[in-house]
Image (cartoon, rainbow, N blue to C red; front, side, top):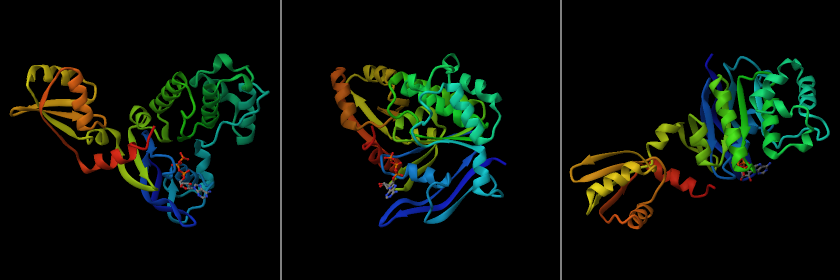
Length: 299
Ligand SMILES: Nc1ncnc2c1ncn2[C@@H]1O[C@H](COP(=O)(O)OP(=O)(O)OP(=O)(O)O)[C@@H](O)[C@H]1O
């Protein structure tokens, strides 16, 4: 049984607004999935539906092979879709012990899970003394207490400082490397590129792209370039992090972008580096245009 979650033509309407529009994708075991889209694109609503807190309007979804009720299947799912909510005057361990009682799982795992999220040393500190990043990490430990098949996170790094963001991303990567499937919603392209193997890009509730992140990155387009000084151009392209690869084609270099960049941006950058381009053409696949349209609203 390798499929964790399947969505078929899932749709959610709030009055006249279609928040999730005919969405279909599946989640396979062992991968890290990102649902990427700007605010209001339907990420949280999608998560809410599959977690049984929002009613769908049409379409369907099922967990695992579909033989269990959603209610039972969700016992194998760990999810954080709201701000972590623990008792401020209780310690990390005491809060997790309470979660174990509520979920009906053994307290044996508390130490191991605190270790995974880097909170073992602070296990006896009261929740109210925790930074936002620590609170988020405790929430992850809490969601892991029943050894779920899949961990679901809604905007896991929202509001955190750069160090907190880095820690959370490292923890997600570590949990995934140990075999837990992950589904996270994010409005940050950068986050999805860093953490996820697969992505569903949403705009206005519709999926624009579903597939591997590396295939998506390969479709940012490419520049066809010539310069007065081709050696200087080649050296610059080789050292420029914006490109996946470069190749010589006739009199030109072809440079494949790994991140969105317009021709005029690149031209300006070359100009400031003293490289005068005599030929600059950008070619892009249609996905890239869709992608840029989404990402211009991000960050
Ligand atoms: N309970 C509700 N009643 C009416 N409209 C809603 C409700 N919940 C969400 N919406 C609308 O559905 C659309 C999708 O919202 P959703 O929260 O799923 O998007 P999102 O991508 O998660 O964005 P954000 O990151 O801002 O939460 C938005 O236009 C939102 O205003």
